[in-house]
Length: 422
Image 1 (cartoon, rainbow, N blue to C red):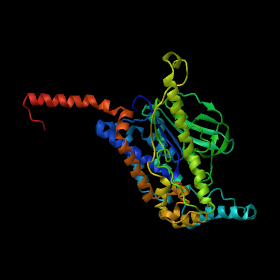
Image 2 (image 1 turned 90 degrees about the horizontal axis):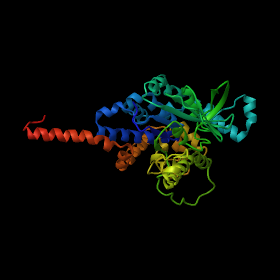
Image 3 (image 1 turned 90 degrees about the vertical axis):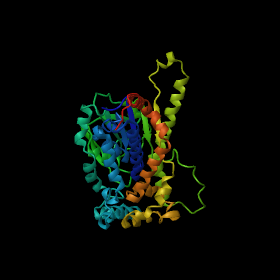
Image 4 (image 1 turned 120 degrees about the vertical axis):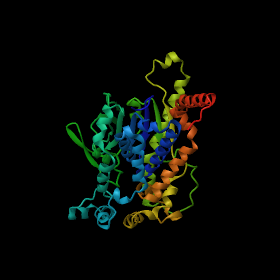
């Protein structure tokens, strides 16, 4: 059974940056064991799990093991601690030539060559290996069982339709939940598949779009972070009463330093800036909107508040305390040689200071252990620094009090009876 009140977990997108989420969750699981004991391993603290892009993959992996929450964290940790880019996209010379090199050639020489050669590369990189990895780490065959056993209330992943231009949330729930529709976004109850995860994580231009059936027709979908104006909305619509939100940058990062004067920005700098806008900005804006609504509701008299459909949402936001672009700059050389060559063609420099101009782009593609391990360690450190807030949010200190009182009573009784405790 999941814990109450119904807690939603919101995992944002960000490619390789999603390693940070696993570090945060690993630290939270450790705090819970320390506070509540080993039996807490059997309870899922999140009844609603919502993910976008790489966050959708992490979300689905957690949901499919909702009856073994700590085990699911360890499975995710093993994958992210030992990541290699070849598990996500083809990094061999032939694979890069067939996708990225052709794609860049088409950009520079025009589609005339593509028509002549009958070759239209769909993306910068071929993410075919990711499909195999998903079948290993996300056993979606267990999802329906988790919902029926009430180990999980709902799972939702989001994708953006290139066909219709609408942002779509696909969800599975244990109890019927009416779909919702807002301007340029809608929800669809569906049986989630690995194809949904591939669509949600199809970074624009970098990975190819996926075709998904929606009713009687099919549409092409890309990364769910695109056109995502309200990332918190799915969790709230699915009934979450409080939210743990794990971001992938910017909200708690140190203030941006004044960059040194330079020449015209490279394609990598522009692409990195665009990706940061796609993956990071909407979440920060939606959190500010939720906090503003909470403050407004707090000012209303109880009688007036009862007449509005709005309700306050308690939340805890955890996001990196360091700039992930700078972390990526230290690890650019960890990328496969073929991918480094491809990225240097658009302006990603070598490791260190030279890489910083394009490190934002690299930060989304660095599925390599040295980088992902540092992000996981950062996530664990950020949770450790805010342990009191985590305890307060989940109410674990209150749950542990009765057990602590019983231990104290047992010690007092043993002392009174002059017994030796083992």
